[in-house]
Image 1 (cartoon, helix red, strand yellow):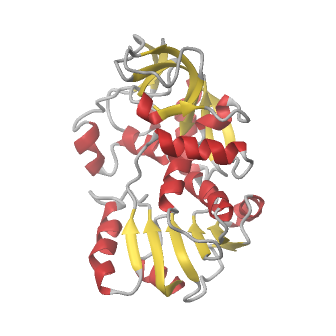
Image 2: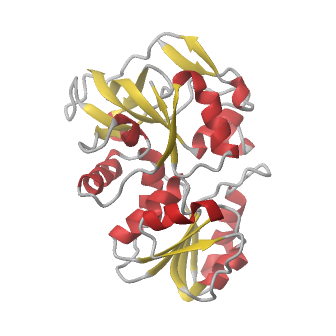
Length: 317
């Protein structure tokens, strides 16, 4: 099969298309004929090996999994002996373990579920990791609360705006000037330009920070005295990257009235099923910036890091 592979960490130029053997599904896994694959920040982190902390889990000198990509949407080609909830021919979405920038991918049934009926494969591939992270980050918000989403036009942020509105919150999204219209289209009650608008003091019950560039002092200033903030680390500088800010938040949170915590998201079929129900009910819709063919995966990752996409990027296979 054709797949996008790499044999070392580095910039997008380390990626190449090669012919490799297709993966084989184990007992509790599915073999999926890939139709589309999502491109998220995690794709870049695993490609570049940055921050270096990620190499502890994914390969010290080179990636343990040579095929790029995690988000996947496609059709079940084969099922493992222990799988009873899905069958050959089902249209599914979720995440895979063998790499999704390929014609075939393998993933555990615990991370794959039925695709939303009202989405194309390209749209479905843009959902799992980003929307799942937003869903987990927003757990516990209540109707009527004032919620601030930093990085509201990005992969996670574009879903966070829609989910917070679906949960009954008053939502303010922060983004760059060219993306203000998109954030309003996503349903935000207010859209702020981070290049010129100051965050009001003590204004928000809940902040979801997907941008990674605000200091903890800035977040605390914008929060109400008993407010909560969830930080999704995206910085890449230093050996710990975004974990450094998350650790600082954990250290000071017990000593203040506000609750500050980091989020290390997990991938779960039950979350993807909850998102599917919201999508089929018309509560959220993927915001896709553009799609790329498999041969242009490197260009997609360049655009992810340098082009400031409006929403998600998708690889079609």
